[in-house]
Image (cartoon, rainbow, N blue to C red; front, side):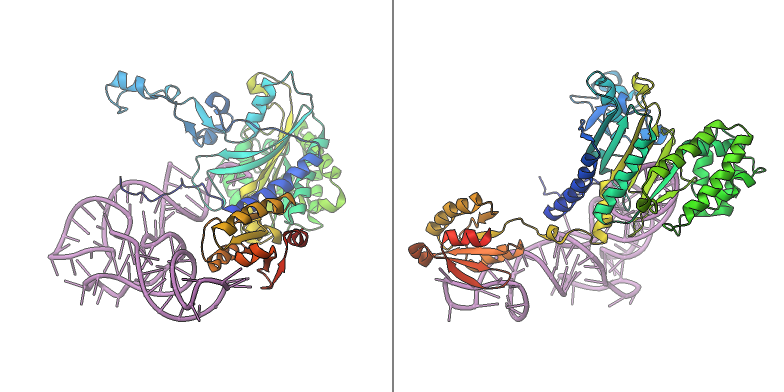
Length: 470
RNA sequence: GUGGUUGUAGUUCAGUUGGUUAGAACACCAGAUUGUGGUUCUGGGGGUCGUGGGUUCGAGUCCCAUCAUCCACCCCA
């Protein structure tokens, strides 16, 4: 068999020792905030039954599901019926071939878990979950086919305190990570109300998708698209102020006041036309926003143009983007879904949640070099024991156990190589100290401790070395 | 799913209007009186030029296909 060039699937990545340390650092920072807010951990399987996943993410989502081929000879029926492995005229029903898929997000598995364990969990149930998810998307900058999400959700409580608490989790976590972010905040009911004002309540998803492009394509192009799509633009004055919102110069101190003013106008219009769900949306948005403490508010942008997750969110929606670095796509998102568990036969339970995109956050922090200095070390080893010959190595091997008992990360260079090579190894791994053991050291018990950063060395016994390195 | 980009050593790339044994840097390995590294010097290994066809006396270089990659759209973390 000819040697093959090794490779990994596109959209997936290997993480070397340094990268793993940095990713774990980000995970830990986020996890600490989750715990501080009273969330409990949950893990679910990598694979779910396709029946659990399908139809939960819209048409686009179904296309992006990674499907797992059934074990055994999945194509057996096909072969028997068709006489060959070719598809041909065979009645190709995917269910015969694949009935499991890789998890697409953490929310649906969570909903499934809640329904399956409804008698064992105490509502309101607050869980966090940090695991990889998979999407059969075309990879590009900041988009991977395997990536980690860090989710926090609350089910079984309608209170807007939950929304505010989850927003605080975003703000606190990114503060800890030292990244300036903008949390865009909206309510699906407002979008629905606006679409109603423009004559098409039922087509509000289409409406929202168009106005969401305001930043990207501009006011004129949005108006044009709305007109072409058949929305009634006669009553434009009601939403005109909203349409003029830009996120370009956010964060700043005045914009949210401008938006609040525009929302007041919109409220009056909703009242006139008895669009009660729109009024409710504005009320919810204001309430949640007012619960955010003053110092954090400047990073929360009220944005009635924001559209996301419209196929499942029903109330407040939010999206996080970094205000620094070159990656402009979202690094987090979330919202409220009134009937999350309904599809699994448990109606009337409301949920609200947020998600952090670990990989994108990592990419931005890496680009900005925001990781603590201590994470740049390749190895955690503090001292390398170098034996000059086989006898010295054996001495080193017993000494290293004493050093480790003192809690000092240490290792013995395992091969008999020239001292220079052994020190090369320590240098390559940024190990700061080396203990050199040869004939002289073994006779006297006075070992050579070399400081590889300073280039100095001294003669000490093992107790003194441990003391020195502790 | 749509559009575009690029595919030459481990990595980043060079390779002139198609013309002899395809180069560089870095990395790697080995040496510079066999117990002292991060610098320097010397030497070395390593590429069927993504793959398969075609044009040509001759193809890394031109054409087609295919695969892979990256980027944008869609959508999203």
